[in-house]
Amino acid sequence: MNSDSAVRPRLSLVIPLFNEAESLAALAAEIDAACQSQEIDYEVLFVDDGSTDASSAVLDGLHAADPRVKIIQFRKNAGKADALSAGFQAATGDYVITMDADLQDDPAEIPALIAKLEEGFDLVSGWKKTRKDPVSKRWPSKLFNAVTAGMCGLKLHDFNCGLKIYRREVVKTLRIYGQLHRYIPALAHLEGFRVTEMAVHHRPRQFGRSKYGMARYANGLFALVTVMFLNNYMRRPLHLFGLWGGVLTAAGGGLTLYLVLMRIFAKGFLSNRPILFIGILLLMVGVQFISLGLLGEMIARGQADQHQLPVRRSVGV
Image (cartoon, rainbow, N blue to C red):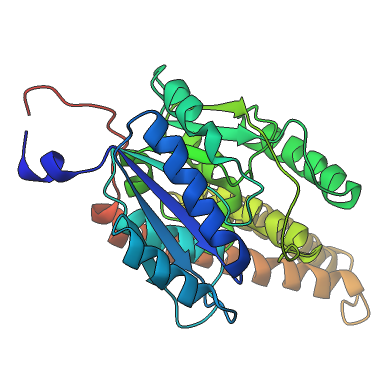
C-alpha cells in the first residue's frame, strides 16, 4: 500500500451549490450521521458555484467545526458541470458520491449506495422513483430520459438525478463540461464502465426555489447530440462529415454533369435554369463538408496521445 492510499478516505462527497445557505448546516449534519452510523471515513467537498447569499460564510463555519468539510469557491457562477469537475479533481476517496445541496437528496441513502456499488458496478445512479417535484418538471424529464436511453443504449429511468456514487477511476476518467453533467451515466457507459441505477428517496424542497428553468431541456438536447458525436465520431470525424460531403458532392456533380450534357447535345441555355445554381451550391457545400472532416481528422490525430484507453484492470504491469 502506497502512502497515498494509506491516507485516502473511503468516501468523498462532492456537492455543488448555488445560493443554498439555509440548507447547508442541516445537510452536513445528515451526512455526518449517515457516515458515522456505518463508521465510514469521509470528506465533504462543497463547491460553491459563485453564490451571492450567505453560503460562503456558512461553509467557513462548517469547515472551522470539522476539517473534513472542504470548500472550493468559484469567482462566478460557472454551471454545475464545472462545479462537478472541480470536485472530481479534488476528490481523494476510493468512492465518490454526488448530491444536490437543497436537501432533496437524502444522505441516509449513502450506505445503500455503497452496498450497491460493491456488487460489482462502477457507477450507481439514483432513480427518483417517487419524485417530489411539480408535474411541469416530471413529465418533460420522463420524455427526456426515454430519448436518452434509446439513443445511448443504456436503460435508466433517471439520468440526471443528482445522487450518484462512482468508483474513483470513473470520476478521474470522464471529462465533464458544458451541459454534459446531465449525461454522466451515458458517458461512463460509453467508456466501458459498468453502470446501474437504484431507487432512492426524494424529498420536497425545503428552502428557496429551483435554479433551473425550461431552457435546460433545450440545452440538454444539444448536450445529448454532443454525447453521441463524441462517442461515435470524436476520433473519426471524417466518417461523419465525409459521408454527407460525399452525398452532397455526388448530387451536385450529377446535376452539373446533366446540365453540361444538355448544353453540348441539346444546345439548351443554362442561364435561366435554377437547377444550375442548386448543383453548384451542392458541390460547394459537399467540398466544405469533406474539408471539415479532414480538418477534424488532423485535430483528432494531434490529440490521440492524450486519449485514455478504457483499461479496466492490469495484472503484473
